[in-house]
Amino acid sequence: MHIEPDLVSPEKMLLAYATAAAAGAMTVKFAADTLRERGLVSLLARTVLATGAVFCFFEVFPHYAVGVSEVHLILGSTLLLIFGAAPAAIGLALGLLIQGLFFAPFDLPQYFANVTTLIAPLVAIKFLADRIIPANTPYVDLRYGQALALSATYQGGVVLWVAFWALYGQGFGAENLTDIVTFGGAYMLVVLLEPLVDLAVLAGAKLARGLARTGLVIPRLFA
Image 1 (cartoon, rainbow, N blue to C red):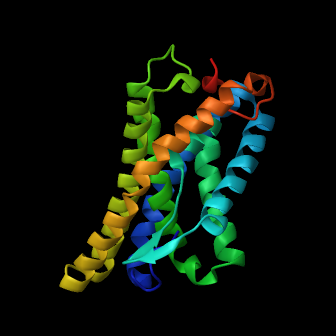
Image 2 (image 1 turned 90 degrees about the vertical axis):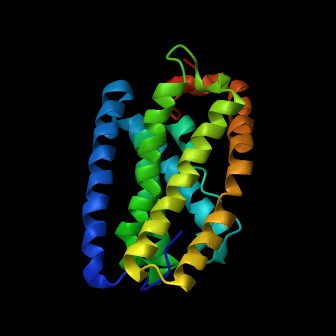
């Protein structure tokens, strides 16, 4: 996952440091909540699993360059529902860093912009999930409409942030606008697939309720 190299010039990248810091502050808050809920071992275990999943999203799953970025199947809502907000956010940041360090070093100058693009929508769906899913409903009982709302919000957030970086870096020229629209149209196709993946994963989780005792999944998955 990356905006194209040089889309945002180095002097403009200072804004990305600020937005990434804000996303990082929310991640710290979520991590503190997780520590109080299940402790350090559970947080670390879930983070490792989330990081591995994110690496697969970036490097194993099919991905295509379209317009100003690449289209990936980044299952942000799935990560949130299975591992929780903090492990998902840290996993996204670490997975992106591993990709940059070992497979796509040309992405590293855009790292903080890309981190913002991935984590800010995750923060949004964390608050959306708290709002639209009743407190007495375990995530394994999620309805399609709720999964669709989470997916559309996450993927839409990714598209909006990529569009922001493209406009911030390159302006409102016709070619840049065309590339943004092309990317957005292609990326929103993920919304058609992600809710079905969420429901399939959650259905599978129903058959493995013993996971609730392991600390490898968010407690809300079953409780």
